[in-house]
Image (cartoon, rainbow, N blue to C red; front, side, top):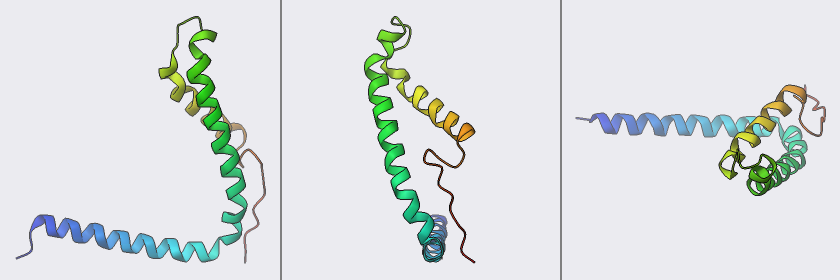
Length: 100
């Protein structure tokens, strides 16, 4: 008889196979969008990394010791949320054409 753990493992395996197949299907349809998104992701990662490094270094100096380096993540996520609100198309603002 098949146990509860075996059923759970088989369910997760089936879900992983379906998600992988769906991802492969979408990758063939959205190659243009992925190609255009790579430079934007690189710029965003660089900006976020620099922001966190500067926040960890200077946040306590700029706030007179009220906030320390442990608040760098809050600052980074706040900036990300503001970017999503005010620049929903991204930092570079590229328009992606949909294929027919």
